Image (tube, rainbow, N blue to C red; front, side):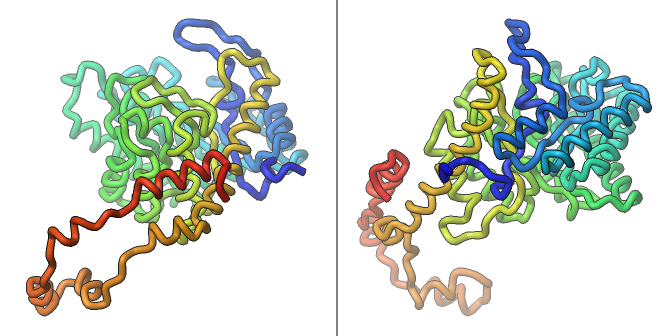
Length: 391
């Protein structure tokens, strides 16, 4: 068996909306037929995926009767059982219906805000019924084009009220569920209120139940803001708030492309996998590796499964490359931290004595600055590992 073929132990997941994407775009109609959710479960299992995620309406069409809803869920659960698949994460579609044209939780209309809470509670019930432990919130409509329509501070307060309310609902129901907030700078709104993972991390600290809320960073969304994704992920990991992650690829400066993981900026993808897998010696991310991407519009259904396998294989290839890179003696020598037993103890844990000793240190800035760090060689070593000529 090919060492890069995915298995369930890799904990790879896809959304119903990802492999089920029909290829429709603003300039063209669908090029693929919709795929039934039980069939998606079967095919993803054949590809080696571990789980499948969903918005409420990916599975149960908007406006379905209770009887229709129950029949759909019953068939989907049977497919999960038949193919050894799970639902690690669920979310709510609060962007598709016209009622959300000016936001869901942040809307100026209390009827819209009430409908969004009601829809989300129903969707949380569905996610928990399917076994989800993570619930993602992407506020795609929580923004503005005519920014004078509301004070952004009011929008932030409304978002806080909604998250606090829904945390209370989960606690009242005794659900084993955590929330993950997903940032994006723009699209579909002209500007979205929480554009980056850093914004979300601060917002979480203002919530009443902040312990049960983390983030779900996405490669494309952070790149749309021109930011290095691995830095956002590192900040979330360091804060203990990386509850879920969306993997894809993106060209900087473009609309949200959701390309196959690793198909653009392979260096960034490598650094991300290196971080998630802890090959530098840091903690490893233990959650699902979710691919929020879709196949090119050029593809038929066979191409969709090529896309899915490609996402997973690229991740596994980069994991092996990262392990080899960080085990390379030449790399280890270049990235080894400088140790100074006289200075290191002074650099944390303020005391008046430490401050005095720091001021007394004789440090020659010119001599220190003259030392080359050899990062050119380090970066070249990384490229050689990536290109397969080393390690």
